[in-house]
Length: 428
Image (cartoon, rainbow, N blue to C red):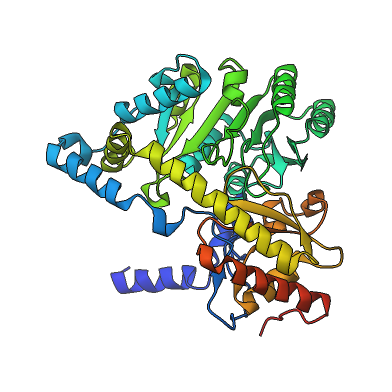
């Protein structure tokens, strides 16, 4: 068979064939479905689009000058290792900084050897799941929760069990009932996943009493707790309760975090904090050829210069102000259509729509009016949106222009009014 015949044969074999035929079950289920961040299909905004759907740091306040100066110092030193693959647990000065920061917060001696540096907190969660979860294992999660983590769990072919939340965070009474049922079924329950501080999307923080109750349940059922601290440092008036790792004495809790929300998302630097035996286990499953060594050194240089803490202090003030502005504007313009509780930190308002208003209808119509928000059912497993207890929208204010928050609230109110009047935006 000559090359032309071979290419023709391959073309006939693959040209009209769906990749879903060869995909994993998890990937096949998602193939050709809308993405979590896709805009509503067939709808064009009538005005410039205002984004209340993006949970990333404010572009205007990124510490660009400090990062540039740190990068210049790293480059001037000519560290050859910054240009090579990097193996092991990650650049030691950065792990030392993470340990020192943790030691100050917890009032204990935390070792750098309890940290693994990763490619963002999403990379941390992926590594943990690949290391601990077999197909069919149960992972319990808050409902709602971050959709990116749900993808990681589905990719591992885990059985995901959602547990409701209330104003104090994860409902540990509901968790206890679910764990008893799963035990009676003989299910292999492996992890409980929580975003314990300034939750995405709800903005809620797990109370101290609930933290203790969660750890008691984990001990009773021999479970690991996976705590996602992506937003923990972004408190407004006072820090969140003690970490689950601190309350547990460092046992049975795996924590992940990130520099994305406090510095810049493009740096892609996250971390795992866990007892050293787990760090060694994760190291055996880390198949990537190391992290971005240059970026690690830049962030470590930024940390050693003392630039991170003042920047985070400024971010807290900025996001506190944005939260109050969007809250006031929504009450003023859309109070007839939605309610919410103000968060004590983070990036998000979790707004409950008046009975009779559908979140997907408001989402589509809001886009047509020129404001982008996130429908709440995107933060729940398919078929479990009823566990949210109503129709919700996530309003993300961190990236939005503060001077346009009131206009965004006006547009959202217009969308709610249109839906209530039976004039939802429809796909063209």
